Every structure is written in structure tokens, then in C-alpha cells.
Image (cartoon, rainbow, N blue to C red; front, side, top):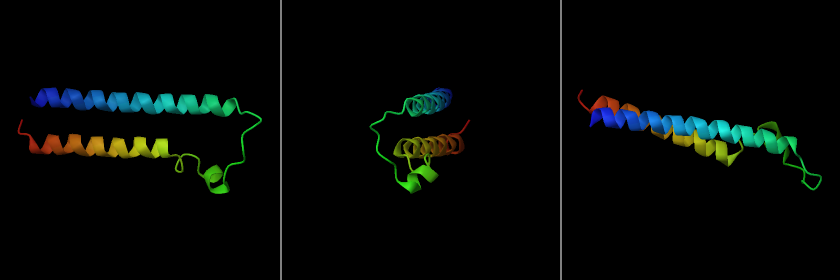
Length: 79
């Protein structure tokens, strides 16, 4: 069962990394196609666009929780 858990952990990390890269790609595409009707963003958000974005914060939190769980399983399960 430990091998299965490790494989699931690696798959989860790959999905997380792929979705993060896809989000960056879509964000770049959207920013390139700025519409004329967009309103001005807050200056704090303009200064820190990634740290103020809840999607990126969710990815960061999910990555930390996933890694913590994987390391927890690695240390608690006897090989």
C-alpha cells in the first residue's frame, strides 16, 4: 500500500504543477487581450498581482498541504 500512496502523491503533484502552469498560460493570454471596458485595478493589486490573486494563493496552499501530507506519510509509514 505504501507504493500506491507514493504513486498517488506523485500524480497529485503532477496535476498541481500542470494546473498551475496552465493558469499562468491562461492569465498571460487574458492579459494580452485586454478589453477597452476593463476598470482600473487597485494599486496594491497592480504592485503584487500574484500574491493578491486568490487562485494562486489556493494553488500555493494546496501545494503546501499536499507536500506536508506526502512527507507525513513518508515518515509515518514503515517501509
